[in-house]
Amino acid sequence: MTARVFLHIGLPKTGTTYLQDCLWGNKQELAARGVLLPGRHRRRHLLASLDLRDDPNLAQRPGDVEAPWQELVDEARAWDGDTVISHEFFASAAPEQVQRAVDAFPGAEVHVVVTARAMVGLGVSRWQEWVKNGGKKRIDRYPPRSDYDPTDEWGWGSFDLADVLARWGSVIPHERVHVLPMASSGGADPRDLWLRFLSVLGLDGDGLAAPEQQANRSLGLVEVELLRRVNARLTGFGSAFDRGTWIRGYLGEGDVLPDSREKFRPDDAILEELCRRGERALAMLHDEGFDVVGDLALLEPADLSGLRHPSDVSDSELVDAAAETIANMLRDVRSLTRERNQLLDDLKGRRGGPGSRVSVRRPWTRLLRGWKR
Image 1 (tube, rainbow, N blue to C red):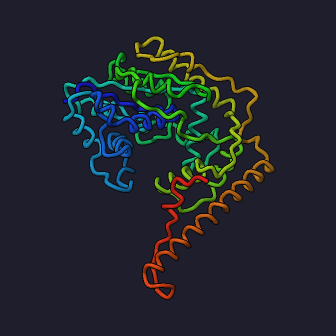
Image 2 (tube, rainbow, N blue to C red):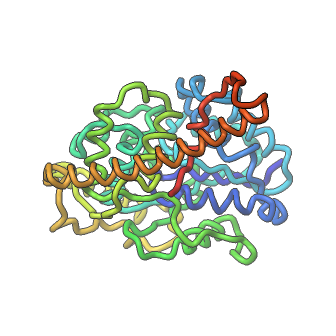
Image 3 (tube, rainbow, N blue to C red):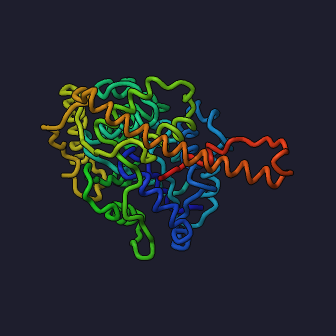
């Protein structure tokens, strides 16, 4: 039976992909040190987060979606050591779902790890990520809904630290809720976050490799506003696979859009709301016995004065960014078409020469997935 279970629940946009890269890249070495990362692959943790939160969209996900949460539980309960489960979509779980997670490990000591950022920067990043996943609304209308729903991975309940602490802390003893603050802007060594994460597990970083850079690309002001307007004109990209592969993977993070990296701000009302929620979280961390691993000052609101709002982007800027994007896409299409034609020629040669009739599915999905020029 596993001795301790560490549930890393996010928050989203707080280095979670980086930490997951570190965990999965060191899966065997962690196991040798007594820490299990269960599941056949990292996607099982995503599916398990949907399963635990009773998300009806689980059934529409491709592949094996049969009881992924129980699959991780069964593997962990058969392990003689500690277990780590990590996905940021766990954050929005309701208290009864948190209790179900704890009850799944009778006799084990359940811990929660929360990576956190200042709410002002996090709110802006969450809107950007939502746009990269097909979101169409302006920054001042995010989140898309105000009411709490445990199946909504984009709402306040998924990234409002105070709300997450209140729900998870209503079930898990506060001394077992470990909060790891991180800087909202670049410049910090991402390995510091990894080492603090390992310290919660009782491990040091010797022999556990970590990437030098954070995993996800951030868009600048003009690029994210351009992508938002493109989303409003897209049809037929409603599935999670399409949004993740084409909108986020290709346009948002595929080096197709320009790379200005200009930071931006929401309007004053949203800024005030983010500050209020951030202050509540800081008060809880000061007063309610949660285990803070790092510098709480990192969660203080950033000064966004002098930054532009997306509504300040001019038509001329959008046209310039669109022209560069189209040029990049045209180069990709030319390159991929040449590869496709070569594949077709090779297949024709193997199947009877130039006169043969060959039915070949176009390899666009395979070629474009993860495409980097």
